[in-house]
Each structure stands twice: as C-alpha cells, then as structure tokens.
Image (cartoon, rainbow, N blue to C red):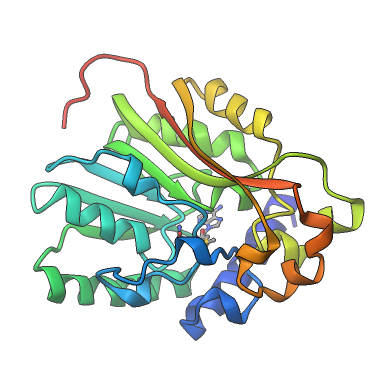
Length: 262
Ligand SMILES: C[S@@+](CC[C@H](N)C(=O)[O-])C[C@H]1O[C@@H](n2cnc3c(N)ncnc32)[C@H](O)[C@@H]1O
C-alpha cells in the first residue's frame, strides 16, 4: 500500500469514529479547537469542534455564488455558506470519510427543515482528486483539512482547477512555525489531531502560489495553544512540546482572470 493511501486510511478511521459518535472534539483525539465552536449554528450537530478558523466570515459570499467546501465534515461551513448564497446559489461539500458523509446528509435534512433551503450537496471524494468539473464553482473554502492531506500541492492545484477565473480561495488551516520533535512528527494520533501533518507557513503559502493563485494574503493568524484544544488527550499530553510550534491561519487567494461569472 502506498504511503498516501495509508495516510488517507488513518484519517478516515479517526474521523469515521468522530462521525459515528457524533461527539465533539473534547472526547477524542482529532483536530480540535474550542475557540471556533459556534453555539448558534443553524444545525448544531454539524459543528463537531473540528475547525481552526471561520473561512465563511471572510468569504464575502453573495446570493447566487457556487461554493466548494474541501473536507466538509458534518457540514459546519457548508450550511453557513448555504444560508449566505441563498436559493439561487449552491454549496458542494467534498469529504472522503463515509460516516462523515452520512452524518452530513442527515444534517442537510435538518438544514432544509430549519431554513427551507436545499442548496447543499455532499460528494464523496478525495480533495487531491476532486469530483468536480473544471470551473464548477466561484469560491473554494476549507477549514482545518489540508494539513491532513498527504499531497498538499495537489489539493491547491485541484482547487484552482475547480474555480472559475476570478474565483476566490479561503482556507483556514494549521501551519508549523518550527519543526516538530521527531517522535511527534511520527505520531499517528497527532497527525489525526491536525498537527503532525502540518507544513511550515512559508511552504504552505508557496504551495498556493505554485498552483497558480495570485493575491495570496493572510487574513488571520493565531498562535496554536494546547489549551485551545479543549482537553484533547493527545495534544494535552504533549502540550508543552507544542507551545509556539504551530498557528492557525486563514488565507485568501484569487485565481487570476477576468470577471468571475456566476
Ligand atoms: C478536522 S475535520 C474538519 C471538518 C470541517 N471542515 C469542519 O470544520 O468541521 C477534517 C475533515 O476532512 C476530511 N478529510 C481529511 N482529509 C481528506 C482528504 N484527503 N480528502 C477528502 N476529505 C478529507 C475528513 O474526513 C474530515 O471530515
């Protein structure tokens, strides 16, 4: 089995367990930050505390926008975006974990009952090989996912492909500020917890530029603290070693070209 397949399996197992339990991040080891939990989310079960930013709040979404959410999980950001783009817009969430997709589908039903909107769909797939046509959307967002990918440059290339010219990328993610100790880098639990797979901030921004994006800008930058991880057993255990090692950033970028049509 290829290393990238092993990494996908590790991530699917970790997030499959989270989705099955429908629990929030305090009870297990996974990407987890209590700062971004939204008590007033329209579908409370869609916010499992797995986020490390709020890309929707920076996305300046408009009625009619077509939005893609990479690693949509239980649907937290997809539903927030769907409210903003309205009935004339649409949101596509892509995730590879079957249990997460099942939970997202149940949440979509609750979202429809609550808001009357049925403008969200969830597709099964890997973000390194998106199940989307070229130029299918005009906004791509992602929240605490790309650090989990074994091939981050491929993810940004695929986001670029799925966007129309003039379209925007909004990504919240974990990046490293200094290398991790050897034993932490090889910890599978810390990988699933969104830390061990993270790359350096400069490398991350360069991967976005290398995919073809312009106007790459950091909109938010918060030092990661293990205290933020809400008692996640893994990050708490190695908390002292992680202090100052990572940050959660939100980045925007633009696919060059004229006049993004909707
Ligand atoms: C930390 S959770 C974040 C979920 C969601 N974005 C949120 O903020 O609630 C990571 C999600 O990304 C998915 N994921 C991770 N790597 C992926 C990949 N390579 N392709 C597709 N989905 C992936 C996982 O299945 C999981 O649902």
